[in-house]
Image (cartoon, rainbow, N blue to C red; front, side):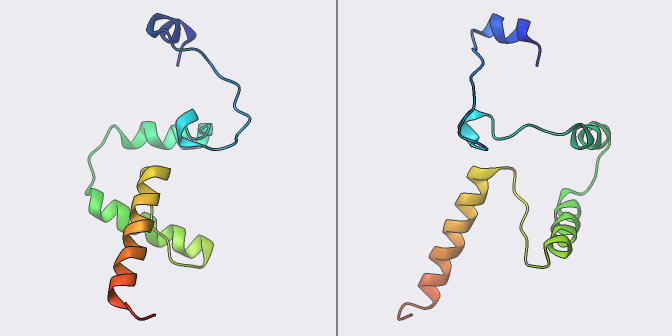
Length: 93
């Protein structure tokens, strides 16, 4: 984002000493990822199919189950929801 636009909006840059946190913009995006995003935003795909195939790809990479979300907050919501659901299924555990 150009500094001119940030100035126009009255947004100041911060020094991030906390690491990867959502309230500070989450994380920096590598050029390789930005290039893929640029390519994909110019076409249409079945997002359910995309999500399922990306999830399977990540699961193979990490050799475990995987679920891809739009960010940390979405991941936390799904994690808590999954835990809540599991606790309801096994109330005596």
